[in-house]
Image 1 (cartoon, rainbow over the protein chains, first blue to last red):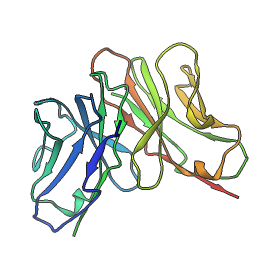
Image 2: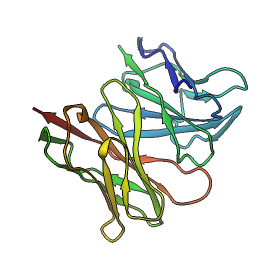
Image 3: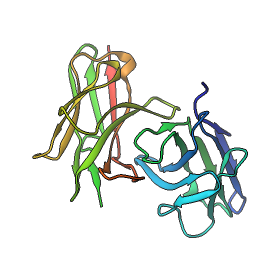
Length: 114
Length: 115
């Protein structure tokens, strides 16, 4: 059973470009969470999704950031018009249940904005 | 709201020595507690969790943690560390309620094990 997959592992974008981060949950998991880790900080919750639904997006910046988890395919975290402050590691986690107590993390996507 | 404090940003220790990584939390409600480990360039891996029951929790790789409600602490310990334990360790907390609750992470403690 493959773990949580994230791609790309590293992404470099110039200021103003768009970044698209992909997350494929573990087989059988229908709950996906996105976290952001800024340098020298812990992980900060961004958004929790189930298939075709955003359940909790209280950690998402109000502008430029969006997330989806379609019926088919991976979950996507999209950042429009990136700025230097978006440079961070973005982690995805999945779980088989809705409590969030059993989260399995992917290896992360390291976004660098130049 | 919950918060987690990991006072030690870095803990250097020699191989085969014991280690304790400290975690204190703040919450007005009962909580569940977690320790995760992050090896370089990898995602987080769950070491152990406290949901209820015995306050001494045993996890993977020989780690254990003790939940102390009166001191609002959940310190992680290992009696004898290996070089391979070098990693970043994160403590996390979530309210003990049904349904989805967000994990709140501390800022992490870097464990550096040297020969």
